[in-house]
Length: 538
Ligand SMILES: [Zn+2]
Image (cartoon, rainbow, N blue to C red; front, side, top):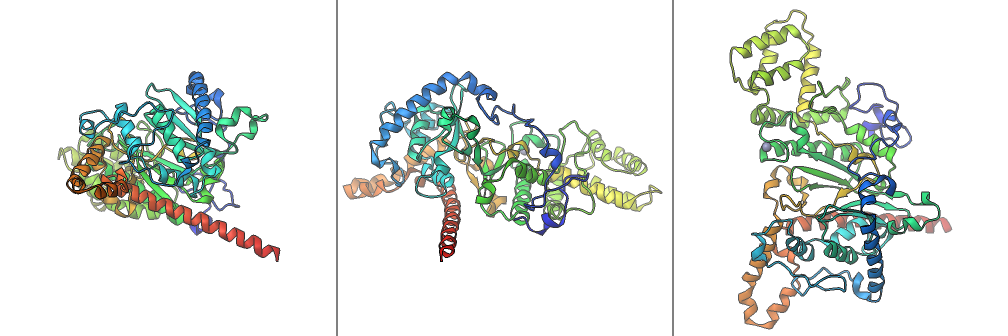
């Protein structure tokens, strides 16, 4: 349950107008948003409820049918072999288990890999065969080591190399998912909700309304392109460590709100492979939330509104909501250093005009404009200090000091508060790229971000798939001298998974620890429920 911040303040902090809220679940709600009738169904083709609305699938219906047929065949084949559910790590140094469906895997030799593009099918195949943490992904989505509907009825969507988009794929086990990925070699795959029935069976249901999304993690998506009007170092798909600090600020603020205001515990942040980050909130109580509750949380966290062309993007009411007061405390030092100092967003006269437009007193602005015109290129840090200094000189007789202070707070928020792609968070059936897939453009793996060392995360230091494959090779070379000494050493080598030989290791270990935490909570929850049921009987 959200703690008293949400319960005591009856308003969504980002909203300046009065909005009724739901009281029963304690989550601040914006009913004006709740009334929207699916306005976003055409977004990316990802949020559609059914085939009719999913244009990409309509185009690829035939492909999909073929795939389904084959997959069904494959499932039956696999049922004959009891070992497919084996809980073992995939011991990658041992020959990869080849099943009927795959053509002989021509694994790119790691030495070649560095010269190949990340999107090269052989590079991708090696990655999914040898490095992708399938077992951890399965346990993460399944919430238990034994296969359940949490995994089996979960939708996966594949983007194939020819850009065909296959929705409603589902798999009983990690091994079946892995096999299909190796067979289809998608450029990426996405994770959708758990449905009431197996997504592959949706068309066989007599009553089509019986096929409904039941549960999904609450997701957040932040992309640096949404900061293009305030970052000066890069634009579009480009990023550097200077503008990545915007992402650091965003993660701090959203993570604090989710934990402190809503009490969520299982939150994983994942680098999106190029210029952004995703959050997956995985607590059991979150996963079953309906769209209305998701919209309420999204509304609670959304503060910066409007695109690059809109005027003032932050309009928050006073007194500041505790979430915003806390956010300001987190963001102020970043504003001074990373925004004013590093980005210097108001260096030119034209840029400074943007600042003046956000300040309330015309007379004060005129004085500031004259001062800055006389000192071309005056740094943003100085210009920011000039505002209060000029105010103190009495430049404006009717200055409203409170209005000026509030305008300055709004400016800090406009230049630092997380800019969320909020549509991703609002719907149970939105799909989001899986952690650990490779970004085909950069070759970087979508690794989890360690929030305990958030400031140290370097997106440009995240390993690329080519480097990882080379690392496997290097590791073998290191061991070769020992291996040459005798067969025993060779056998020892078999126990080591390929990901352990690479710089992917800390990320997989972090993911594994995160997943273990979720499974522990779910198991304890089950034990508690069983105990309660038993005690009812007596
Ligand atoms: Zn940059």
